[in-house]
Image (tube, rainbow, N blue to C red; front, side, top):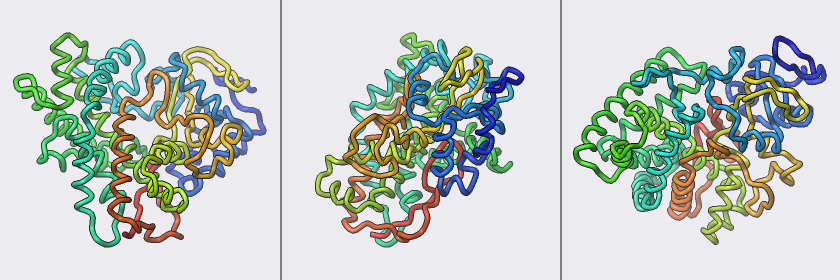
Length: 421
């Protein structure tokens, strides 16, 4: 290894590997075929110093899992080395009433003690909600199934995207008349993850934040006087009972639930349907036995994870894969690459609902494992089974056409998926 200015660089043999934008969805060739590049990196240098982004890029299953499940690794981008451009790019700031800068990621970008303090309150409220969420999700799915056209349609915009948006709106506090506003806010706020966004998109993000904050402040005032059967009522009640949670933290973390949860669940639905329609045997097995849906979802999450990378920060000087890493250096963990590690999964590129072996990491791990994963699985299960029940002959409208993946870093989902009944 070559040391320089506190960083440990890679051996010279790794310098020909793809780096920077070439390992993100911003690169068209990577979007079309990420695994040609990811397989090379994992094979030649699974703990790889990315000179462009000034970070380590991790691709093998065991190392990624070790970091994800180790609660000592950090998430707050401000604790990364100032040169770590990729890690610190996820820093769109918003001021809380406590004066501390915070981010769209909310608790997802916090470390203890603040992370544990906030997460424990939201976890208690969300877990209680999940016990009675199924009737709501069924009703939302049924309404969107009814609205689908008789002919060809885009599964993403017409079905996969509005379902999680409407579910989380209703879970939080939204009435039927609020659903279109939630969709508009969610679609604007997700662009915060795009470093190439336009000035118009940046203005839309600011307007969405302001609109949602005003809406939520009004709902919180009302729920304190007249509680309803929704998550905001639960949160303000817990707050009144002594939970250490400010109004600004409720606002920010409800934004996070609305944004990241919507996109990732929509991508889970879209990616799973795309895989099924390209694999007739698995589709036939699911039609014959709906209980197979759990295996379909887990294999979809492994093969085409809605979140394809996540970032951690080294808490102290450590060694990973024989590579010394200094405290504060950023680690980008490629879930896409780890999920296709041939040392862990036999024929990892294959979609099979009978796969034995190690669990996937699509929902993260350790202290930051996804709080909303039970709701995401429920929505995807009901949405996919409902779709296949309504359309016994559902097929890709253009089966030979290449998949149109979205050009948004951190996330892996289809921009468009044209299907025909």
